[in-house]
Image (cartoon, rainbow, N blue to C red):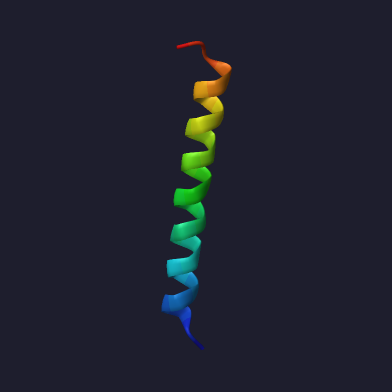
Length: 31
């Protein structure tokens, strides 16, 4: 079992979600 690999992928997914949320927030908020 490669637990470390799974954790790494999870962290990447979390970072990706954070970026998407940040972009969405910028689009919703003017400026």
